[in-house]
Length: 93
Image: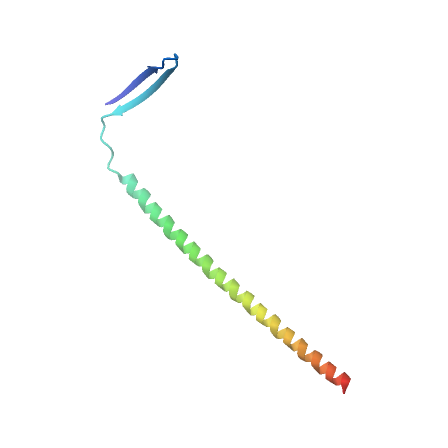
């Protein structure tokens, strides 16, 4: 059985405040919805963990590629420096 209770309160200034309360004697359901929600929450957490771990691997790959490119630039600069030294040696000799 459901019962609705309405309470009116008047302040000394003349303001009226109304409060509605609903009371139900019906027992709660078996709680299957709670289990489904909990399972969905765990699945979402696992999916988020997987995505973040993949993003981490992607970041590591990107960092490795940037490091390799920097190494190649350094090697090219070294070769340019060596070629410049050889050119200077040929001109001075």
